Length: 310
Image (cartoon, rainbow, N blue to C red; front, side, top):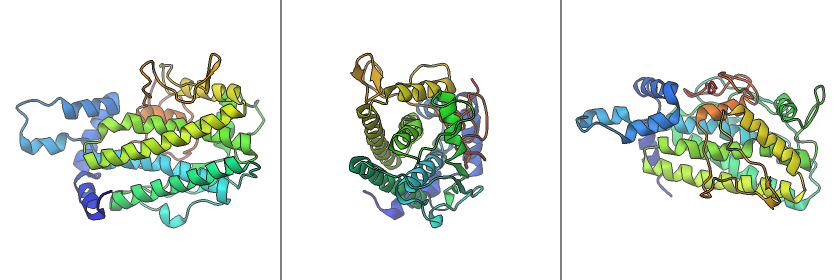
């Protein structure tokens, strides 16, 4: 779609540096990604040309935040399909390099579900490669990922299991689909919420392409759950996500009234987005402000690492 040299040149201009980091964190600390995006659009007519680059949001920071989430998805699906994680050569970078806790091959019985899982695993691996390649030396390392106790905690929070019980998303196909549902929709809303931050059109086009793929994945998981009549546990997971990410009631299950609800949208059929802070509330499994927990027991790498305070 575009040349490697062109992308690397853009990264050199927009990747994380101290000046951009300070500006980004000041804005994000006040009101999240939305304020930063607005600040890039609403500029004073007296602003000088020299100051304009300083006012732009940090594209490298946005993509590194996405890379943390792609590590999680790639490792989850790789373990489910192959019985092992992605190659270690694809996990290094800036920040604390972590390991993967838990994960094993899913004993698939359905050819269809296995095919879905294999395709998604391949897509997520390519997303990791793409972001790492184009971020260059600015890429963050894979943080520690918990694919074991985090799913149990999430299942307990959703009311799928009782206290003292455990939930293994790799134990069978139903568990696998429910485990994937826990964070698939989160990935879609994360890219939707981050889109206004990206100032470089090439980056924005690439992010839109990844968003579309993630939406296909989420729809596949939602459809599979619906076909298996797993609407009730899916609704409980949706409610748990809603209880974590703030006061709004945006998240939706896979059934509404007596109809399928494969695409969660507003009344205009537009998907909603989440701020990075709200995304971290969910993956940290914490409704308050935190810097680690849940699927990321040591936190995510990069400048955006703190969940929202509600």
